[in-house]
Length: 365
Ligand code: GDP
Image 1 (tube, rainbow, N blue to C red):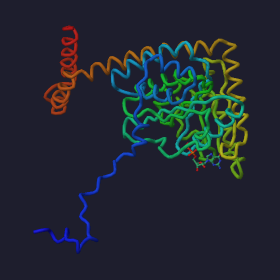
Image 2: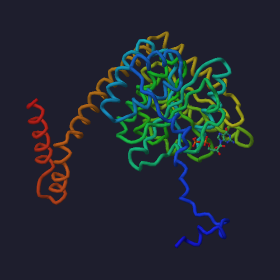
Image 3: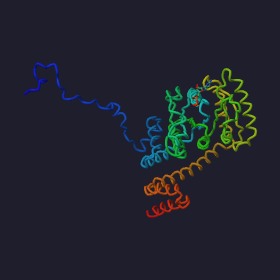
Image 4: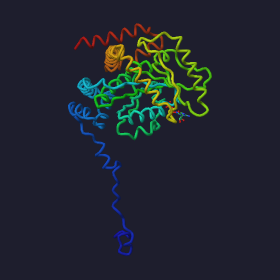
């Protein structure tokens, strides 16, 4: 018997064989997302040519934890090194809400209008602890992000602060080789990450706010000492007088600190990132500093010291990774952790056991 639906009477009712599902991924995007892999030399040539997509991909290799990516990244960095070092590197810090993104947008546009090329990198210390981000994922630096001569890269995520900082430092090298002659490294004012940023920049800029009562509240002494310039943002409208007062207070406070090794007395300025007031003044200060330390030799001395610091940091990070990523150690650690947590073993004995195991394994090869 034929099924009633197949009866000519029911011709209007058609049983479909089933509708083919559309592909879940737009085939056009799928092709686009498929990246060709490049050789080290292709990366290097692209970077030296100022090819931004290739620069971005090379930075992704720097950030990758995969050993084969790391090897490639190191080879690229090595070839880019002779072409790096030509940028003015500026660290920028301030508490959340100080106006870092607004200011970076304004500073960046100011520099771009003068014909410069700017890379903006970030070190977000929160990525280590909370896997979240203080600097945020919201679209920051709205104008700058539309500019061809600006390269904005968010903080490498995951990993220890040392690892994140090392990746950022390596990214600076690639950006410089790609022709960016200003590099900003932004961080948020909570202490340790400032030390990391300070160790990779020529000028360290602290963004402050006026009118918070005690002007020194919340600034760690160490951060004040690191600053080559302190700029008080939001000096606009009713806030101008307050900003001027904060400037006087900060200047007085700075007198209490010994003169830094650079021989440069940190300057204090007021400006408005939002209304673009005195942006030029901020940059005149940065350039005055650079001229000053180039003349007295501190510029080069500091960069060399930084290289030394990064040599040790890199060794420390590599050793740590090699240890913790060793499969035998990975297996051993949870057991040792439990034994220490339940007070069955002392921390020292457990540490010795882990290290002994590691060295025994290493010595086998
Ligand atoms: P960040 O958290 O340090 O990156 O700070 P944002 O740049 O996001 O700025 C925090 C808030 O301060 C925003 O609402 C900005 O619009 C505002 N802001 C930033 N710069 C200025 C400024 O120069 N003047 C005034 N009045 N407001 C500003």
